[in-house]
Image (cartoon, rainbow, N blue to C red; front, side, top):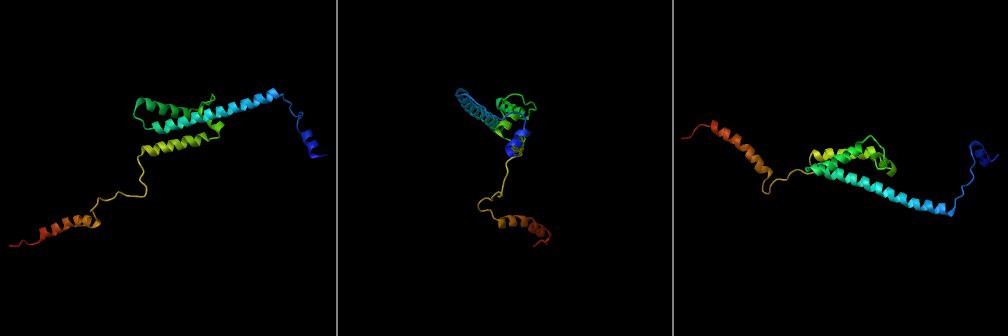
Length: 153
């Protein structure tokens, strides 16, 4: 018994090739292009949501703040009904929705905590040196020693 016969015995049903008419074939090809367009639309919706989240996360105006809050609520929604819900979009596009949500939230928190200074300290004004700073620190102690000295006549 060869492998093909064993496979046919173990799998139920008939595995005869499907026959389709040319009109059916071209209809499938036409629908394939629509799906690519739908996927582009899905990506555009998600891209706009991320853009609004990042741009308006610290907005002061009421309308812009509402845009941010709507996107945040949409991303955090537990209801995933509808073709354009956040979870469905991420699944269809092969994106980890939870990871994207976490990354955006981390970025928001980092942005709200203020600017990050990396690698450099504030520079001193031109002309100010470490020697000048140490002299000003020594002056009070010199003045204190002068007060304890005997008055000269």
